[in-house]
Amino acid sequence: MTDLETVSDIDWLACELIEQVPGKVSGRPVVRGTRIFPDPIVNSYDLGDSIDEIHEGFPTLSTAQIKRLIDFAHAQRGQQDL
Image 1 (cartoon, one colour):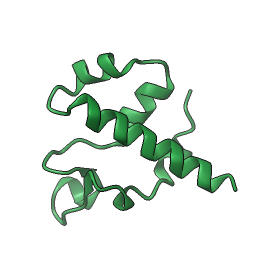
Image 2 (cartoon, rainbow, N blue to C red; image 1 turned 135 degrees about the horizontal axis):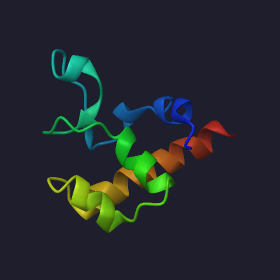
Image 3 (cartoon, rainbow, N blue to C red; image 1 turned 45 degrees about the vertical axis):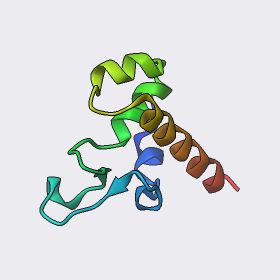
Image 4 (cartoon, one colour; image 1 turned 135 degrees about the vertical axis):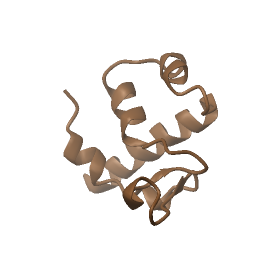
């Protein structure tokens, strides 16, 4: 299973696709204009789901957005390992 602590350590606010609005889903970071948390997207990918499978679960996001969230998370994790 994916290490959820690693995912939650990601500075999602540094990603242009993410917003944090007080009062919107308890002020947690979400994909801009939605109520979708980025962590489940990355977790799904890390557990073996394809981009297309993730898109089926989150049809309001484009595949480009999904790819960007995954790339951003993986880059953030890489920086944490340094």
